[in-house]
Length: 180
Image (cartoon, rainbow, N blue to C red):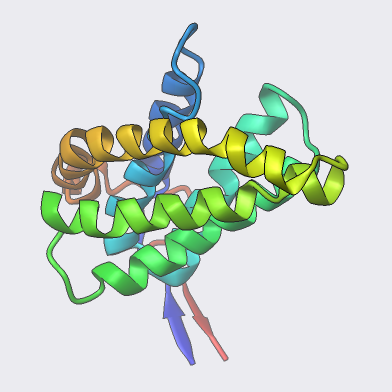
């Protein structure tokens, strides 16, 4: 099996920085954030490993600076990494269009929220019913954010960052290949 990681370190840093800065906006509605909308365009170009890494480390880095690491970090990082992998598989033979960003983003958000909703009941003795009822407005806001960002941000990131050859700067060897 051969896996190639295209150059793009600067692009990853730009993507993570954009998500990080947006998530730091004070009084931002909860769950109205651009992580999935940023993962999707990157997944079109950076393969399974790059797509997983973008989502996973985006959460790990953010939590390391803001809230600290906890079980929520492990669950959300793996979920966003998994969404990166799923997005790569979805976009592998599809156009990076608003329609496709929405077709992936809406079910991806629902799957993410269904999984992360279990953190309270599994690790903090929260009642399942309370978690489900509390999750409904949270998920509605998350879906609204996904729709807005998938429509506006994802296509712009794909066009101006992911496809931008001027940003093809890497701090590692260009075209690094992993073989097994």
